[in-house]
Image 1 (cartoon, rainbow, N blue to C red):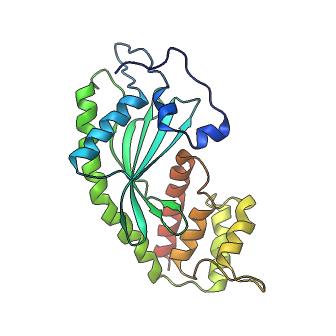
Image 2: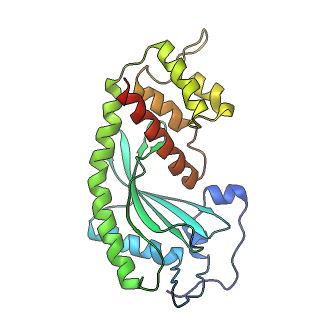
Image 3: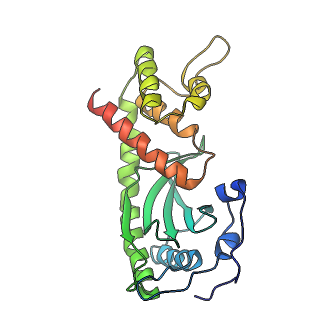
Length: 247
């Protein structure tokens, strides 16, 4: 694919958190070497679009974040609705060797716009010399096939959290444990507590279940970059699964 700019644009922190597709595609592709073929974000987006079309999926909304001054990209495309949630295809690309190309499933909870994932990545592929444009398209098709199947797995896991009731004392214990294990940032405690606990002047937003606890954890991170949301979701999912095992 032809590179769009000769000079890499610069982005501030707010722009990096949420960026337009046009800005993403303006980031130039590095020169190929004998062993490294770093395909541009625009090429990965184009391959993803072709794969989505093959599965007859309609993209409703596109969201992007970048990191490392544009070298790393994270995309999120919503492609349908279920149980009050939007299915979303997540994909990532890197032009500085720090990440492989990969695809994952997300669900966006419509009522609160929380983005949740079990952080399962499919068809992870490094930018080696064997990665051609044709192979890029093929891996996108294979990966999105796996992502579509994973929507059911992720939604079933998420809905199943409603079965785990939590007493107030147990929620308080889990809150301390979540902060201790780096799942809940201490600076987010008051926001989290307001979402989960009733007070004399306001009702809790979430109910006393593991579903509600998970909802509060994902709500306090929702305004960060997609890279951060994905990484933190992985910690949240691991934490919640440990709680389920010991329930």
